[in-house]
Image (cartoon, rainbow, N blue to C red; front, side, top):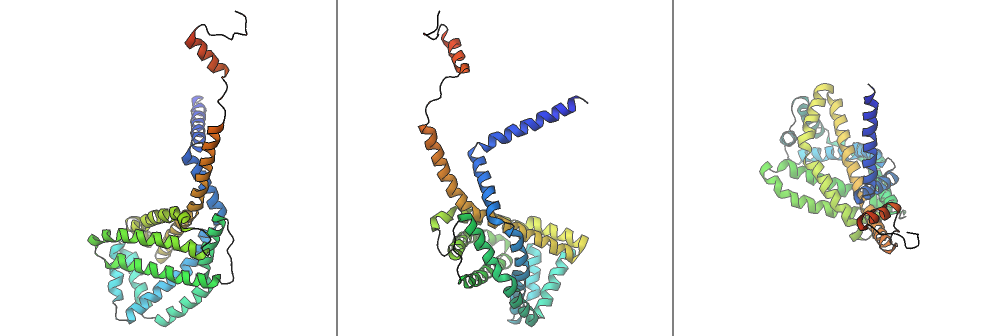
Length: 315
């Protein structure tokens, strides 16, 4: 019994020492700087953006489905392709079929819902992202014309999401790998354009590139692998809680994706600051004088060289 606390204390001490060593590595310094800047820039924007997204972008998608049906498209076939792509079954698949069918039969009501949701919440998504970029880059760009920018950004984003949805559901599984380079290129361009557009070109494109590349890779990987883990989650939640469980799972997925996008958005200014800090750190180390011999190093010299002694001391 007496050895238990000692072992626990030793393990805690080892973990503490390991963490202390990591903070002095370049990975640790970059990670802590990134975490601190993200907390300063986000200010819980991820949760607010998720709520706005669910209340505006999803109704917009439903309207697109309704007009797709009225233009002669087969919404039932579209629903089945989505079910197959996400590996849905049981209650989750039934919810998708019912949602697509109900929306297609109520295009007018869905359109009114989109107009209301955009005016109340959709236009605010662009403002939330702009504020995150402003705090991350520590610039001030707010202007009276920003509402127009937020509107343009919102519909461009919805259009790209729609294109991504069509590409993933309408393309055969064997050919989806061909879209990976196209997706990466389009995603990098989008994450370069977003801060440049919302910040009125206050930040050079070159400085935005690290965050755009990271966002394209990490967010693209999350969305691309979502059928592997999102589909089973939706199936389990639908079986246990019905439509409420499906909604909770979708909210969780949207929150994860938006949080990743904001963390990647903050990475570019963090990387810029980190590079300058490391250059200054190396320059300071190069200029620092050589350390004077300590008692331990002196004793080591005595052991190595035998009769070495301070000439100022008596024999």
